[in-house]
Image (cartoon, rainbow, N blue to C red; front, side, top):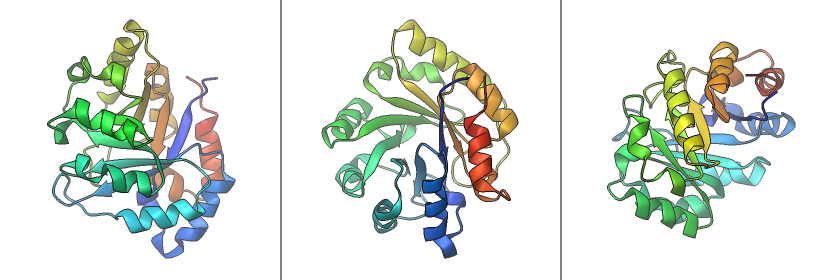
Length: 219
């Protein structure tokens, strides 16, 4: 069995009962809590900002995996760090000076991750892969939950894994979008280390059991 991580996505939580949702995450076998920050510019949706992340951090016992789907994410590194993030994800497509941004994230005391949209090839990471702690592959177009899984994400995960192994690195691969038991199993077999799941967890009849089942998946 692969020792992979599960990161439920807060975007799919019931915000009228956010405290109960976070308490559920605390009681579950989830490893991280994934938090999507959207600005309505880089992606066609708006989610929440730093006051919400800070409030979540006061209750959540799991590390916060913060994914910035925004333009110019480098402007908010200090704010993300101050909100309690463990991992800060920035999009390759949004960073003109990615190397500088990655090291600014690390200097702020966080792990640094780079995210790729579905159309962005993993080969573009050739000159930055050794500097990041994790790569997040979007397996749906970012902006909304409950989208259909993009099938080429499996072979894309495998290509990225080969790149990481060929360089002797231990960079993590995270995948977000359309993750369920069936797609999760295939992604793990292709080399994924972290599965982000939103609706599949939070809309299930028993989220704690669903997280456990995802955690028990074998590749």
